[in-house]
Every structure is written in C-alpha cells, then in structure tokens.
Length: 220
Image (cartoon, rainbow, N blue to C red; front, side, top):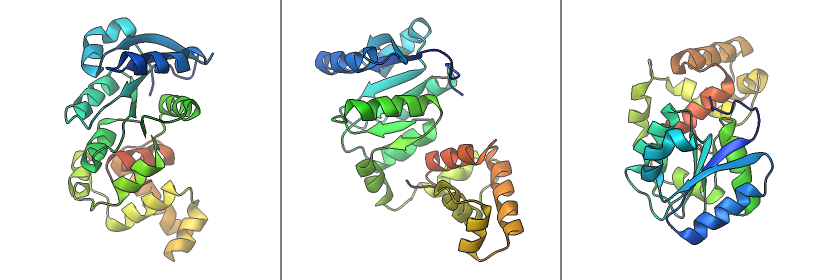
C-alpha cells in the first residue's frame, strides 16, 4: 500500500545522475497538478539518507545500467511505503526479475514519452505493475531459470495448474472463461483461485497477479 493512499497530490522524487535528465523529469512532474515534486537526488543511494526528509510516494529513477545493488534499494524503499519507477535502456532480464520481486513497479525506456512516465507514476502509486513492451518481450524471451527460486519466499509453492490459472487471471479472464479454457468445472476453477490467494497471502486477484509478476511466474 502506498503512503499517498489515493488522497491529495502524489509526492514524487527524482533520482538521476545527469542534471539535464533530472531537470527534464522535474518539469514533467511539475506540469501535472496531480503530482508534487518532493525532491531530487543523484541516485537511490543518496535518497536513502534523505528518505524521511523527502518522504516520496513514488520515486522515478533514471538508470544508466542494470546496477546489481538496485533491487536491494528498491526493497528498502518498499518497506517505507515508497514505490519505484525505473527508466532504463536494455535492462538485463535477470536484473528485471530480481527488481520486480523486490517491489519495482514499473520499467520504461529512458526515451519514453512524458505521458508514459506520468501513467507509470500513477499506476505505481495504485500498486499496479507496468513494463515497457520491449522490456517485457526481452524478459519473456529468456529461460525462466529463476522461477524455481521465486516461490521460495511464499508459504507454499503453487502447483503447475495453479500457475496456469494465475496466468489466465493475468489475462483478465473470469471464472467461467478459465473453466472453459482449462476444460474443468467452474467450481474447480474457483477452488484453484482460492488456493492461489491463500498460498500467496493475496487479498485479491489483482494482488495475486502482481505478486506472480514479481516472482517471475507471470510474464506480461
């Protein structure tokens, strides 16, 4: 759950090494009444020391590469109720998987249009995951070697059938459509969904899908 909770302007912080990039992202935020610029830093490491002062709901991080320490910083920010949107070109698929599991909410290309960045900020604040189409394609084109480890953090591992149902939920299918797709009764489909929610500790189908994306079980 985000700190903003849907009330008032979303507090946004910018993390960018380049002064030019930082200025451009600040302008995007300032031009939107639903957002409020809460501060700017050189990188997420700098933000750690000023987190209480800046207190952002969402951080937009401009990245030059797939820094291996980035996922751990994202996880730390998530514990504080701060979500992160990353702007990065050609991220490493393994880095993408680790970052999503750590709580990263959005990955866009650095040359993304202002409208796309704004959409990602609002989506992240609502707890929705958003991936640039090219990033999603690259992420899904490699063997999911990390998937076996992805479920280690949940109370129980999902069965292959439950993973299949979770992916159908990600497609937006309802109980009747899932039962038809799998050739099972609607009661059985409901049972699988209830089991998924219980195992993941998810309060809703949307939350279960989001968790599945972060764990590498669902590819967008």
